[in-house]
Length: 329
Image (cartoon, rainbow, N blue to C red; front, top):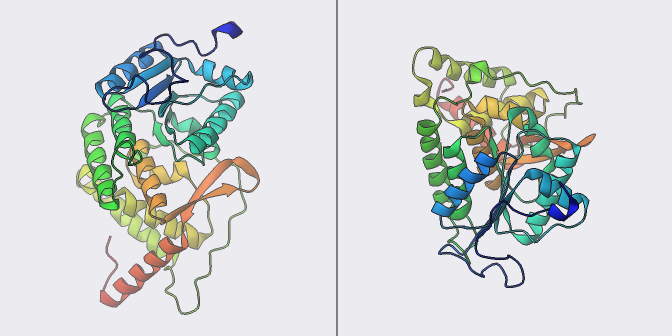
């Protein structure tokens, strides 16, 4: 590809995007979309779905063009929504994603980034500014759900802002739709790939304030987790999907064990497809129950932990059930 070909889309809608502002030539939704994906059939599919949603597709081109534009310092103004597909990543791609993340955080652009399980840690680690929607090996339904999620949570100037109850309802709805549409593609927790990570020094369990409730012994929490998983041997696991609670339990046990939890490990602990788990992780961060912690020795990696608020809530929960009888699962 020649330098002069950079950022020339294989199709474009509504004329040039730029001087007239984001509202120029907009459709009913008033939002513009850019697509970066190397697979032509995927670009075509995303264009079709975006058009159905009433979005004006500004450009759809290869991911290479986005990478090359950054390397040449010729990055164009971002659209309202940017879809990026990067199933595999290298140093140049990660640098591009990190730069895109910072630009999106400044401009208010919403990002939807799809990747594979093997690249999830790297992608998650380099995108910590704009709260992107991350998808893992998504099917078409997952991408449509993500697009709807972004449109529903745009600032009130474009689309109404959701309340916390609305956000939870949206998550429940997208989870149910995802189960129906992606049943075959679901990641089975029992057969999930092992996550190989370089050793890191585990943090010391955080001390609770004097007089505050304490998290229980990690062995008790792990026993509860095993009991919950045991149900799937006898009853259809679809009846028991509760990713928020499963992740809370896993993080509570890990905190007591002094272990760091990667986003991939937490997705596995959730017992749902990784894309669904990532949606819940984002919601739990927004609710200030989870916190994202950067690896002090490798800025490309990040971990998830209970926030102080989340740890205290779990501590009070276990203190309460200790007074009322055996621990539930």
